[in-house]
Each structure stands twice: as C-alpha cells, then as structure tokens.
Length: 78
Image 1 (cartoon, rainbow, N blue to C red):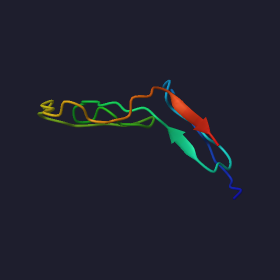
Image 2: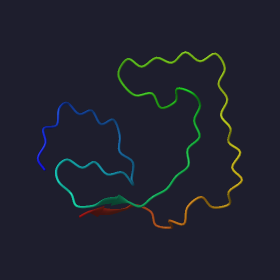
Image 3: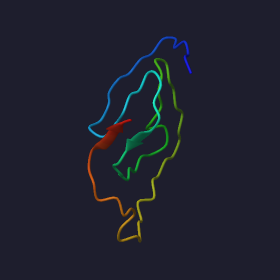
C-alpha cells in the first residue's frame, strides 16, 4: 500500500538492522542482544532533556541463555 513519508532522520543502523521504505511481505532481522542502560539513555530528538536526580540500572540476569536464535545478521527483505 503506497504511503507518503515525511522527513526522516536516521542517525545509525547496526549490522543487523533493517531500514525499509516501501512495500515488503516480510522483514525479518534475526539477531538478539541485551542492553542495559540507565534513565534517559535512549532519548531521541534534537532537543531532548532528562532531569534525573538518582538513577540506577539493575543488571542482575539469572538467565543462562535469553534466546535460542543462533544466527547473526538478517535474513533480508522478501
């Protein structure tokens, strides 16, 4: 289905990321990661502001394996 895309600002795309404009039947990146970040770490935009007095991130992870996905990269766009 056609669409009109306005302004787009892409700062970075990782090795397993997909940026798709237009029609696609299936978009299937096959990569998993775990990221720990504190409050306000992933703010986006040109004028973002975060006011945090105290911030702590819990990194306790009792899982041995979080995903059964063993492939790296992406399967592409179909």
